Length: 68
Image (cartoon, rainbow, N blue to C red; front, side, top):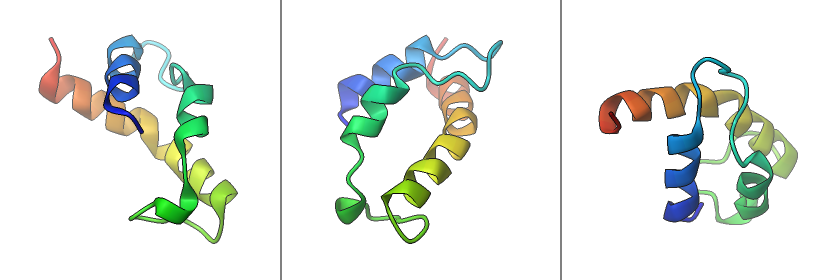
């Protein structure tokens, strides 16, 4: 995922609506299962689903660590 997209997602994420991931469609477009170094599941769809499931928690942790 490009750094600028990641920064935007982290800054737009609202913990008040924890299951809403900003720019999720843009994130999906950047996924490349073949290039992933930490593959989850047997294919792109499993990998994408696992990422979407874990992303909100990761974003919250990252916001707490690096953002105001």
